[in-house]
Length: 454
Image (cartoon, rainbow, N blue to C red; front, side, top):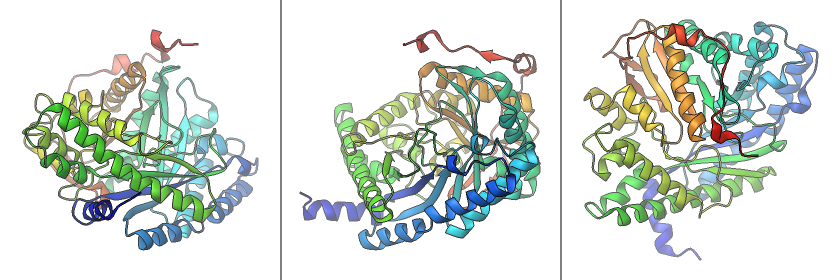
């Protein structure tokens, strides 16, 4: 039974510690929309999304009012468009028309983002995959709410280096296409290794082919709550520290479980998973870096950072899985630079570098996220950074991702403003040495030996 003390405690977390449900994401299958005629395909996609998601925003707002729990975003994810559109699309321009349809549908139902303009090419690419990938810069420049992702590697398949090379070029093109908005298009594009089918967070959300026709996934967040809890045990040993994080993660996840069950019941859509990630925002006190500092670091990036992050990630998962039987998505601690004021402060102080961030991604929830780099970096350098991150995911059997923003016209030390949840970021330096000969080899990096488990 829930007692009045627990009610008051949760209310205090919401009012003073930035506890929120970061997103309700409605996953929608487009497999029954597949058609060889492009016009009919677009009509079916628009009809399916606007029908299934018609009451998503309304439902989220009702739950907010009834339970006084902030639900920051209402979002949609769809079947990877490279799969749903392949029968009708014969050029990048054809795929871009679907992106425009997704954008219209998202605006009609009132969600802030729609994910799934995606391709899954961890082993190789079909012509449809290539066309969708080639269309990404155009699609992201012409739409407001569409998010794109490409999975280029997995532990079982290895790394598709042809796709890695192409994605470096695509990110550069996307930056150029959206340079009037500080290359904002790149903030809606993520490259994955081991992408999960049920991720509710953007920009990487898509509705996997193993999922139901429609499903509710919820992402919770509460770095401010964890930090406040740790302030109460400052200076105590690691056992106390770990127990505090676990108990706090449990409470945070229970809030998400409540929202997910209510949304599922009210919409008549099955509940999928809770993603119990600690996702920061630019708001003061809502920072993963702030948690690391409370654990005992002067800045994120100081010696001990990777160990502290590993501890945090593990305890969040241990607490969360006791609060919900269906934990999925990414689940852990996000370390996006632009969305976390503590990370921004660490970069500006010189404590946090791209290389240290890469080391941290070995143990965090995702990878190199929302990092602004100079606009004059080469496509091969971007591909090299992607390849490094994909290797971490492949070898460690975890999800890793790259969301880099080469800001056209800006260099190291300058600042770029993205606005809203995307925040702002200092432009970080990149290793100047070249890797073109490596990236240009072509082919595939084989799966690691420990992938053979049949």
